[in-house]
Image 1 (cartoon, rainbow, N blue to C red):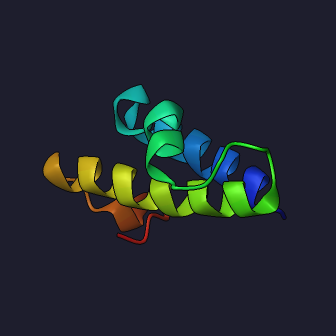
Image 2 (image 1 turned 90 degrees about the horizontal axis):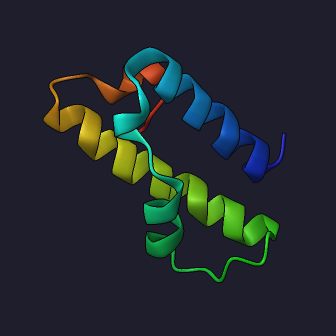
Length: 72
């Protein structure tokens, strides 16, 4: 599975479990530090950004990020 597919699957898993409030593709894109050229490098950086951003939001809400596969 490539990084884009992993990003999308993890986003769907978090959203299904806890709603849209814990993921934001625009914020992840701004924070990933790689130009959005739809490359594997971009999506790998997006996956790291998702773990960081969703992990922080879930933790702040008192939810263990590991319950949805987030390594934070």
